[in-house]
Amino acid sequence: MSGEHGRRDAKGRERGAARARGEGSRGALAPGERRKGTDPARTVAFDVLREVAESDAYANLVLPPMLRSRGLSGRDAAFATELTYGTLRLRGRYDAVIAECVDRPLDRIDAPVLDVLRLGAHQVLGMRVPAHAAVSETVGLARQRVGAGSAQFVNAVLRKITRTDLEEWLEVVEGREDDEVARLSVVDSHPQWITRALRDALVAAGRPVDELESLLEADNASPRVTLVARPGLVSAEDLGARVASRPGRYAPTAVVLEGSDPGSLADVRDGRAGVQDEGSQLVTLAFVQAPVEGPDERWLDLCAGPGGKAALLAAIAGTRGARIVANEVQPHRADLVERSLAAVPEDSVEQVQVWDGRDVGTQEPGSYDRVLVDAPCTGLGALRRRPESRWRRVPADVPVLAALQRELLTSALAAVRPGGVVGYVTCSPHLAETRTVVSDVLRALPEGSVEILDARALVTQIAGTDMPLADRLDVQLWPHLHGTDAMHLTLLRRVTP
Ligand SMILES: C[S@@+](CC[C@H](N)C(=O)[O-])C[C@H]1O[C@@H](n2cnc3c(N)ncnc32)[C@H](O)[C@@H]1O
Image 1 (cartoon, rainbow, N blue to C red):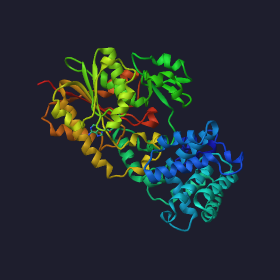
Image 2: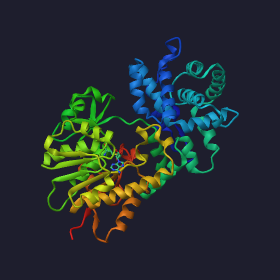
Image 3: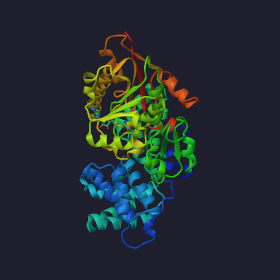
Image 4: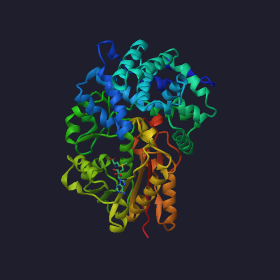
């Protein structure tokens, strides 16, 4: 497979293995070859793309119910899923190819027509759909959804795209760029500001800059579904035995599914287990292992919605005679937290509350033994599971979120009692959201009032194996190295006066 798509760069490294492995590999079928009329799988993909563009919808929330309501299952559903997510992720790459094939700027093409072209480009360049089927079915889709005139235009552009293979196209489009960030951004389909932020974070974590390409490629591959076996409710061993799976690499609670239908498992439906990235599990496990001085009974999850970490915390609290307060600012997300806690022992949850986390430190000073701040962030560490988010985020989001993160961390450090521990977590590796937030907050507090704990040692101890981690007290995980989201963890302890 990688032989077909892989190529060597100037240094002779084979490139494109993950690229080929990602969207293009899973037995892409061509439903259009099997039936007359417009193919429902392609129509679903188009309709999801339009909802994402017009209503700011999330593809992973819109697609599953649409597949159900249109009666798509099995191979057709898999085809629609791969087409939708792959087109969204690789949009930047395909736009550069499309731009080579049209005589006007892309912003002068009607948005729905451009989406049809992207879907066609992904079938031709990212999936193994035979060119004739990809073109004729996509032209049929254009006729149905954007009109006969546009369908002719789509036909002409797609025919041009099919004349050149992916590797040649990538050489053409990267040849137009004159620096490495721009080249990688177009080939691996990331906005340049994100590529730059990921490069800076990678280098700051002591990784070689030439890993950047693998990181971007990892963002373009669909992650496997990972389950968490919530301690005291089900063991990872029992959970793993009930489904085709393998154990996680690092978190003892993690079970990695071979397939992708967690809803078929009673443990998941009942809340003894849940879907949770292994990195999220690992940072939560490290947080509860961090040494507090004195009692260890009352824990706060300051930003709890939708409740993945709260459920893991509450399950562990249940095994240790502790209890949690789960706090969330948005009422509907607090409802999701309630639901996620369905299976945990009643006395391990004190309450789910709807407060602005920034006020908790002043309202309840020194009240908790542990406080987790799983802060709202850009999500740049979870791009692989949110196909459209790289195109929706803008650089101006970063300072706004960083200001909120500083306030939440400050509040958490006030809400924890002296001797207690705060865990600061983001699913973004962006330096402005991770170490800069921590250092800004600590600088504003009296010197020596907070100590930084060795999160790296705790994470390694929990994993029970060597992990590639920077020689630092905080921890940064990476999709291309650890197979997890790019989670960040800093552990802080308030010093007892
Ligand atoms: C990264 S998510 C937390 C994910 C959650 N811990 C889990 O594992 O399922 C951040 C959450 O913080 C919430 N949030 C945003 N601003 C907040 C604030 N001022 N106070 C409390 N929560 C806030 C968001 O609504 C969102 O649910």
